[in-house]
Image (tube, rainbow, N blue to C red; front, side):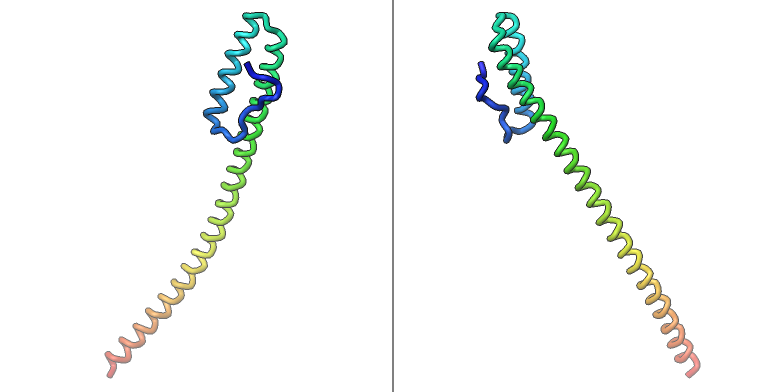
Length: 111
């Protein structure tokens, strides 16, 4: 049984945290069945701490993912704008090249 000094492992993979929570839930049932009320309070405190840690990490991960996604979208928008500007420049160069080629063809066909 856990003691009050035990903590939910902070550096565990979320799957292990879920397994730890499942084990604590089983311990809650065992304590209740054995009428070990003092131990039940300890297990419930530990389970509460683990739940809070798991969900706070999930929220932080969610916020980090949202922030990353927003950053990528902003960077992509800037990139698309630069690509469109470059496309316009290239279109102007193609038009100028075509005019130059037509002028060269006209000059060579006359002479």
